[in-house]
Length: 301
Ligand SMILES: [Zn+2]
Image (cartoon, rainbow, N blue to C red; front, side, top):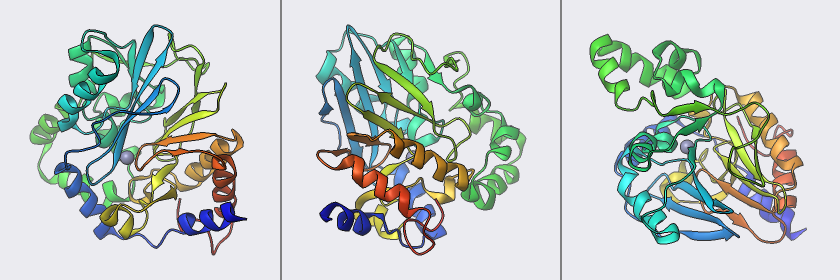
């Protein structure tokens, strides 16, 4: 019962507002230093974060003699991430790949620079490729509410030349590769990816089935991103993806149910402190159940 109470406390998200979204966008650019000491949340799984106002996480995952980075923070995070990685694996080893749960600027920002530094590929779900290549029409097709109301009008207003220049800086052309649809992650034994679309069309979560460690990106986060207080006060708690940057709300809710069905023992989300310990599976299940209740769970995602 204590779990249920805790879940209700963390699971009831307040109504979100565009003001929060704008605040997040601004705060993300001025991310505070911190979250640079890697924490081992499960054997061989390190969380680098949460970092900055957006409490963004990057994960380092070891398997056998190889390791991979899962997500890559904001564009300004390159040196911070590389230094944190060095604390775990030393500065001379290169990862097999950087795997992105989705291609948004708070998770793919440093991917290009780190892939160049480490000479490794960046792996994404095939459905994320158009965004990874910086195709503007894909950005229009896959836009969330914030994109539609603010970002796209701004990008149209600045004209195609400046828009192309802005997009070019984050393009992953040359380093990005599609993951195989069979769910495997080449070289990362014991791990698989599952499709958790909704926040973006090709959003994935990474799963280590042996001990039910699930890295959920923004499909399920542990920071109350849909409450104004979540970002401003750093309030922790299970939450669906931020609705204002989410492409398809019903799909996002289905993905949360799919994650709950895995009975995760550890949740490493894209924002907020990872959930570790007894009762994580029940907490996620109760949160997923709450999504179906009009008065509970979550207003949108
Ligand atoms: Zn995010």
